[in-house]
Image 1 (tube, chains in turn orange, green):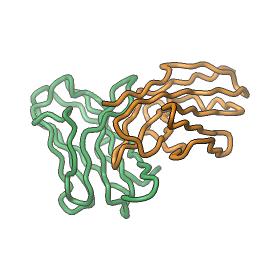
Image 2: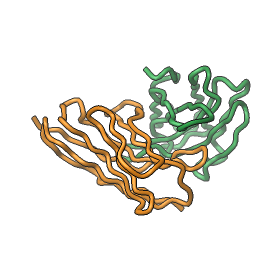
Image 3: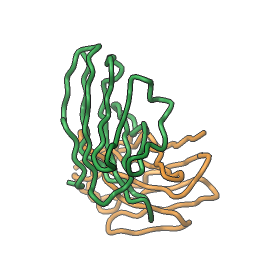
Length: 108
Length: 114
């Protein structure tokens, strides 16, 4: 089976840093994605980790520990436009299994 | 704009009617996926194609749902005898069949069954 857990909602302040955690238990694993989804829009690709460690891309970084079944997405210098849902997703062969997403609210 | 298009963007139908949605993927992508998403949930996998071959269907996909990709380019998703529980956003995504395998999503078709 598969289980992907992430917090339902988080709130942070503009300019601050926020870390969104994700734990997974899946019957197969070929990599982990993070997607961003603004309300009423389609998900857009943010990052991909297949090996353990930190991948940095501008204000966003993603970390993976395969032995712990754990990942996080780190957002720095938060901007109001970062208000969105963040979806943790596991690649299993040709498919991607999505978590329910974390709705991030940014306060001015 | 990811390059994946879906039509229509919104569909309101009465219970019992049939509906068909279309997805045009990025032209060089050989994989095409259909998902369903309801409020507060992540996208749920429905089915996917490699070229024209339908390789997997979710158990969520009842026999009222059928999908085709006849020439390995655009795809259609048909729902017969719609029910109120079918109300959702239907998302299409495409990917290259190699590398990271990230999927690029279309804007979705929002279905409301009254």
